[in-house]
Length: 477
Image 1 (cartoon, rainbow, N blue to C red):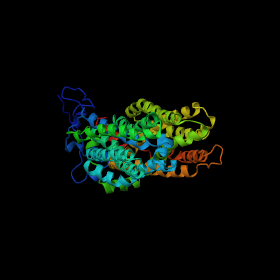
Image 2: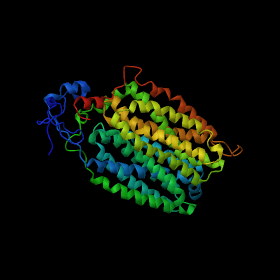
Image 3: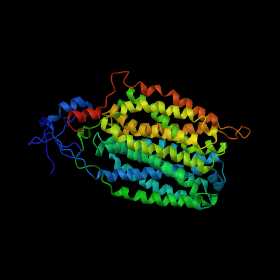
Image 4: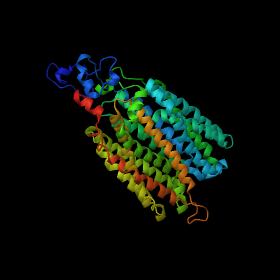
């Protein structure tokens, strides 16, 4: 049976027992009607005693989270399915590798184009309409890709299918912070966001690792696309059956109504702390996207095979996922997101700098070691940064910061891909078509943004984790 506790009882039952934060019910603050947009967390706490609300965390929250994981995996797999076998794909479609690069770049640009619609959908409808929309686009895009590949390698049809799947990605990649705010407490949000967000690079790892074995020759490309379409269809169907929202909120910060979309954008745009996180997040996501899409072309001029490049890309992602799985619950429980950001950003920059010389060693040891370090720092940073900007911008609605951060990362990913491809060496260089200048560009920009997150808290007072403070003040975490 669920126990009720008044705020004045400091979270204790009539018998004196403390209520459990994760699953018990308690009364909590709700601001007076008509003033919620103007209330800061401290003021909301002050007004709490007048309007009791029950809290509960439901096991069913894992169904929706699992669906976000599945969709992020298959969509990212779609994104890198051709980039992982760029030489083989170019031979099948009868185009150059630059055209194959555009399959990945157009995917990122489609994300940017769909972002305004995604922002409105998440703000007004919540996560479920966004998840359903993504599933419909995934089904349409994957089977269109297969139709184009099956019909003798119709590159234009495959490109259209790729763009449609690209439209699907922002609906599920930007949804985790909104979903975790709706279904999880402060002690579980980073972990929930990590699970859903890091499924995206997991799909990329599968694409990097599996594609070279499924498409060993140009004639195998249609079969590879068919297998991915079947997997994507199976993953998309459960979206229509997940619950839309919990009957009761999980904690006080979930009941604290967020400001309107227009005011959220205003709050975020005026938050210096947001920009200090947004810029490095966008740059590093952009370089991850560009690096993942071009890794085969970065390594092949130095004598590596497509399988070698695929293994390096998979190590980048799988080590990152493992480290994030270990660190996210620890950082979540102890609210160490600010310190983690300030430590991990310099490590990421150092790894990009060192990678300038890695391919020249012509052994797998250096690329794999640096890919592992880069993945460990980057992937553990991703969910922390996403939840940190929500905390810093509260009471702005969580989907606003998430959409802005991911859109910035995808837009820069497309831009970086084009720049790095444009500065590729020519046929007369040694080695021919090498990408040393591209790696130097990547390293320089990665190092330049390092000081920004280190400045968090230096202006305007200490950076505050506002939702954590709100929940802590009510005795719920």
